[in-house]
Length: 433
Image 1 (cartoon, rainbow, N blue to C red):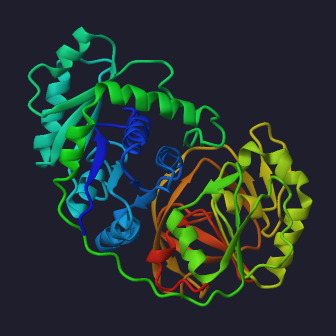
Image 2 (cartoon, rainbow, N blue to C red; image 1 turned 90 degrees about the horizontal axis):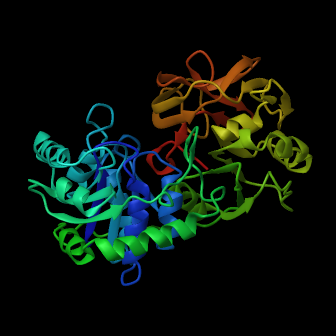
């Protein structure tokens, strides 16, 4: 299947990749139907790419999916689209060493690379950076966009002696900055200027970037396999997914995984939503519950509904922020306690050191996620820390990663599992919703 595509990468984080990728997508979307992808285990950047394209952005991660899984996911979500734009993660060669990096995604998917170089504190050195990135592992770097250009003179210094095609630049402008906090960029729900800033940078890109040349580079991509035909499954009841400003860290593919099996509905713990029906499955993802402690504590109707489903043995999966929500209490940075669902006797401090990285979990008891002895992969991404864990049974031991307590993850009660690891459902063979 023909599918022109390009990867947007850089030499490091904080180069402006996300905003420029979103601007490129927005500008190109005027003529083409674009599927955005995000390399790595990221929830926030895909929100911006979705605003730019009008379609959900899809993650591609070699640790979670494996090479075959990445190719199948790329192909599955390319169907019906004319162009793929993949935003890289961190610097081009950053992963676990080089493994699982944007470079490896490029190699596996045979996708050409467009570099974004942050020129805010450099000039002629830009050429050396690009040359080094290109020659280090013979990466398929086909073009460069300079970011944070202050003047024509600055642009000329950056272009001096460069051997890779410069397809454009973006001027320095204070308005082209998205604020950040402890887990990365503000989410689009919490940054009300998202659409305006993407529209503005798209205009800048239309003025100063050769989009026709970018398309020529994208068309160098070889064909990808035809997407596999998916079997239609008989839907069995409802899956409820928590979705609001407190809980919004979800892979689109996980939601689609549930849609194949259930009628999916969303509910908001922040709004004290009480679904009219009991669930077959409840899915509570990560996010920022620590920013909404008072509202979550007061929303007793939702908490009681969740507890009723837990006690009835319904399948509940809670990841990271969802684990925090199902705990007994969350303790703020001001040392104030806020009562949560109280499914587990776990007290969690909401602000501590950052925990980030891939995880590998071994089942130590049978569950609907995995059988005893099975190994599954995920990733951790949080600043919270449990400080009291009492009378809790765990489903997994951490072969890689921290988990909840003493190298264990996946707190279990009835058919409810709450864990710090974020999972990718399609890659878990033993998962039985």
